[in-house]
Image 1 (tube, helix red, strand yellow):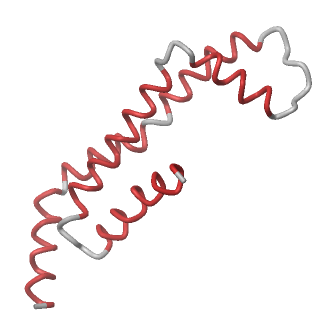
Image 2 (cartoon, one colour; image 1 turned 60 degrees about the vertical axis):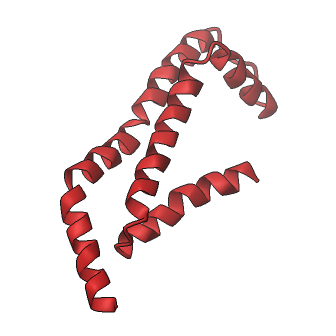
Length: 112
């Protein structure tokens, strides 16, 4: 259920941006900040390694190699690298803020 709400929080503002709805802009910024906060909290959590181990154990994989501990530490960096997309979205939104609101105001005038 939580995953469904999380995905809806990402999809609904995206469609709002495509339709040039003013309410979608702050909602998109909030949802991308939530993604970043979630990623940072998971990455810097003291239980990160234990959570990854429990996920891997639940997959019924063969015995992990001895270098698995080092790979778990590197996975933190890949998790941080995955935040580049939401950060790029935030930067793009902030750069085109005025143009978006001007376009949204223009479509509001033509539809009313």
